[in-house]
Amino acid sequence: MTLKLALDTDSTTAPYEQLRAQIAEQARSGRLPVGYKLPTVRGLAQDLGLAANTVAKAYRALETDGVIETRGRAGTFVAAAGDAAERHAAAAAAAYATEVHRLGLSRDQARAAVTEALRAAYGS
Figure 1: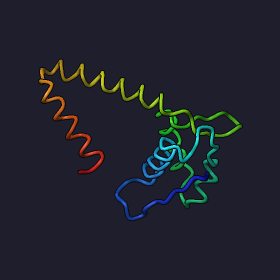
Figure 2: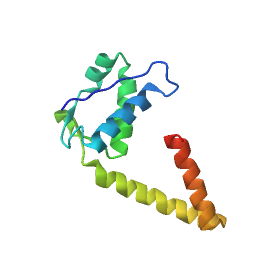
Figure 3: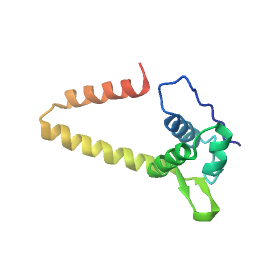
Figure 4: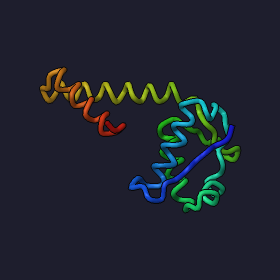
């Protein structure tokens, strides 16, 4: 299995976000298995024609999300992200539920807000 990335230079989405989203999707779908070693920041930046800071920003976001892990000099690897992503989503959902309750919204109003936010994030 290899990392396959295609950046759209005409997109309004920032290159680091395109990179982050593609690596995250490939890791979560299993196309990049747990333990897969990612290219170095400099190596990937050179391959994609990006600044090293752009790749580093994507890697930092992926690490924060639990998708990848850096093991010092050994490199950067795909982490067992499913559990971390699910825990993060559950924590965000709990915070959301607390906030909409504090605001006095009904369950239907809270669900409608989530549905609209998901529609905006995923399209249609």
